[in-house]
Length: 212
Image (cartoon, rainbow, N blue to C red; front, side, top):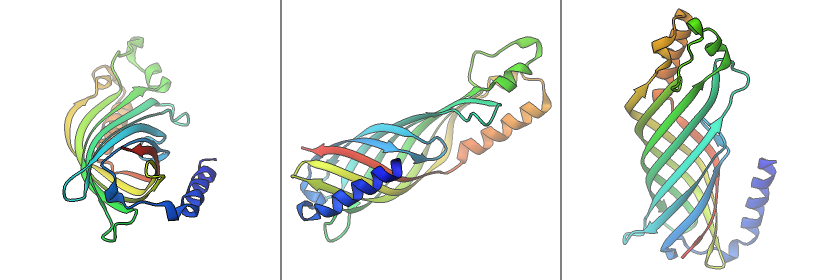
């Protein structure tokens, strides 16, 4: 369903390409963001606002968040990831709709305990905190294309992006304080090490909004 909607969006955009404005004509933009194909948590939604700088680039602030429940992994409940980013976006030299960007981000990831892990806690002492809670900062880059219709409405597509966590600000693994099963503890430690620096790739992030 999503791929059909994406293809329809691209067809409509190409059909009205004659109405496309050069990216540097926009001063401010406000958009809603939908990132279905996103690691490590898919189906992220959010908002973004950007303002054009004197040199023609745009500075954009974006917030994305999503929750994923991997029903096929009994050790894990819900995984929630939120990301706040600041990026500098550039159009192609000919002023067309192609763009690329780079920036920095702050993110928070929380993973709740699954029923299988809870059932193995000694004496049934369930922890009140999350299985894993991580916050950190990193760098990102990506490229895409944007169309502007009737001098106001935006349809954009970030074709591909890479967000790489670099520094862990805080790490909480309260579950390890009460878990006694060696295998469980080893699995959680491995998960923490992976999630701290696992690259976040996303493709076909759709944006809809307006300029003013």
